[in-house]
Image (cartoon, rainbow, N blue to C red; front, side, top):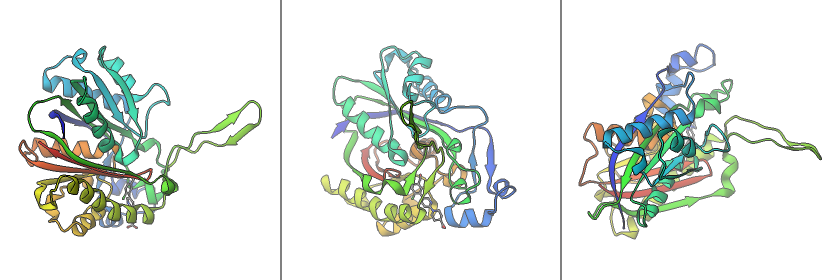
Amino acid sequence: MERFTIVESAHVVPERVVTNDELATFMDTSDEWIHSRTGIHQRHIVSNESTSDLATTVAEKLLAQANLSANQLDFIIVGTMSPDYLTPSVAQQVQGRIGATNAFAFDLSAACSGFVYTLSMASKLLATKYQRGLVIGAEVLSKLVDWKDRSTAVLFGDGASGVLLQQTVEDTGLLAEALKTYGDQSEFLTAGRQRNSNHFVGDIVAADPYFHMNGREVYNFATRQVPAVLSQALETVQLTANDIDVYVLHQANARIIASIAKRFGQPIDKFPTNVVNYGNTSAASIGILLDELRATGVVHQGQKIALAGFGGGLTAGALIIQL
Ligand code: 4VN
């Protein structure tokens, strides 16, 4: 077990709300289609904020809530697939802007599994000399969306979330995990292809900012692999599905979550969702939901919760956490 406590959680979304009805004013789609297929009713879209702006706001909230100063942080990891730059990383921008002079900072790129992979890596750091750190998921997916492609444009939204983690001597933290990567299926979900070009041969590959998704393949991957990683994690510590109080899954699509719950033989009310309000925010989604569930008391101290991410990579990952 990797011991830590979740001291605080926080999230932020841009002010601007775009409803399905608003999408239908410039795209051949409808609220009925989007809502019945995905569970999404609206998403938040940036006006002038960048990924690092959203991530910095989350970091500032976490420090304020915990009454800590930035120089008390040992590390900052940001899970993101939509950074402002290739370098610096979002985490490095956050570190500079909040003045976390004692923290090292880096991004972790694992798409929709970003929050789970990042939290797992943070738990390893907290098992060494590092006492306290931020785990943030931050995305501006709207810049990767082809607003002429109705099959993907309706799915995604912008937002950021995070947790402040700290070493503890209590019996809380990461009980078990299962992280899986299927790089041979990476073509099923891509975004942000970089150009490859040089002085000597000219253009080799052209840039393409947009999402490309084989929805059927990713959907089937999720319904098969999420129950598998959850089972695998539970088995390593001889726990069963019934021992988990709340399942906090990546919010890709409400129907996918329902079919995962069914396959896993657990009541759907143990799988809360908020995709209706935010769409799919990739690495930010699990943290946004976790923060809302903590705020309403659905998730609280003493529980065992399971987090599961799945998507681009293709990746899947499950964490069993004792709160
Ligand atoms: C994980 C998943 C998805 C995803 C895949 C398919 C899908 C979301 C396809 C069928 C369509 C409705 C939408 Cl499972 C995306 C990501 C990317 O973050 C990660 N929706 N759908 C329909 O016709 O019903």
